[in-house]
Amino acid sequence: MYERKGLFIVLDGMEGSGKTTQIKIAEKLMRSWGYEVVTVREPGGTELGEQLRKLLLAAPLEVRPTPVAEMLLLQASRSQLTDTVIKPALNEGYCVISDRYTLSTYAYQGSGRGWSVAAIKTFGYLVHPITPDLTLVFDLPAQLSMQRVAARGNPDRIESEGLDFFERVRRGYHDYAAQQSSRVKLIDASKDASAVSKAVYRALHGFIRKYESALE
Image (cartoon, rainbow, N blue to C red):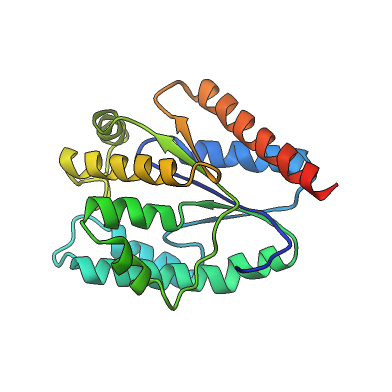
């Protein structure tokens, strides 16, 4: 296992679940508890990663990436982010908060696209992704997710997928959360932003209390 000084926290989940807002809340909370924080996003987070993000999410595309090309672009972005930003920050003792990480790949490309876990691990072999200390999954019914995306307008390529796809993605998140319940927590993102923020506070506060108690 990769040894690091800092904490690695991921906020993941369905489209339209309010992750962007809640990441700002999480960052503010961690800073208030005395942690220096670095925030990143996937795909993206580096100059190269942001260019790959455009290729992955641009809509409409005259030439859509094949499932294999999509996976390779995602893993390339993750490799650059992990090696040049996340690992150095963790080595320096920063708390890294990421908007999506490996769990998105298992949910979207695994459950959504039909890739097997073994295949995803094979694609990610050279990346050596880091296991997050805590992942908060913002959960929404697929129909509500699509409604929220439609309401804000200009959906990207992934957001433009159909209901069946997002139903599979949601099942993937639930399955993984059940398998990794000690590190993955579901947050009900169907509630209003204030209620979701309170749930984020409870999850992070409980995690930090346990983490700091173990250090004493």
